Structure formats: C-alpha cells, structure tokens
Image (cartoon, rainbow, N blue to C red; front, side, top):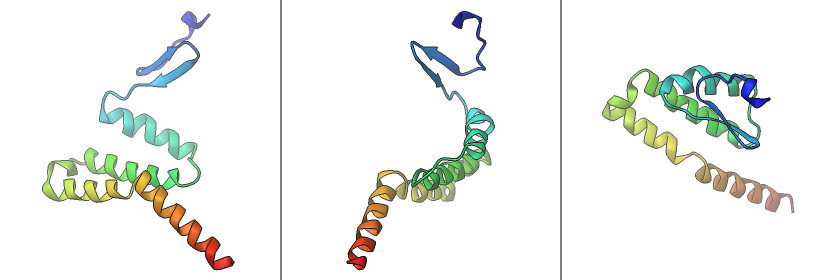
Length: 100
C-alpha cells in the first residue's frame, strides 16, 4: 500500500519512520520554517527555532557571505541548544532557591 503513496520531494520513508532530507536552503525557507511557524515548538526549543530562523534568513539574504554576517551567525549559535538549556536550568535552579 505504501507504494501508492506519493511524498513531496525530500520526504522519504524507511520502515516505520518518515523523514525529510534538506538538500538546499529553499527547503528550509519554504518547507521547514513555515511548518514550525504553523505548528510551533514548545519550551526552550522555541527560542532555538527563532535563532535557527534568524540564521536561515541571514543566509537567504546572502548575509553569511560577509564577515559581519558570519560573526552574527557565530553569536546566534553560541546561545543555541546546550548553551541555552544550561542557562535555563541555572535560572530555574536559582528561582527554586529563592522560593525556599
């Protein structure tokens, strides 16, 4: 039955998983970002997505081709994922300490 299903370009299926392979920036701008704008992430990942989106927009406007643009991307990256998660955990721990 799966052989009758047509998936958009970049969408693949293997056993019980479906995944999307990003092959170009336009996939991010036209598919990934609109999807997560429509179906937002929750928690700390919201901020990571906003940063990801800012980097994609910089790249889409060719900002990554300048020294200033690359530096902006580096600064954005420094606050993403584990760096942000660690900061959030520290803030939550501090807030709990203050309530005691």
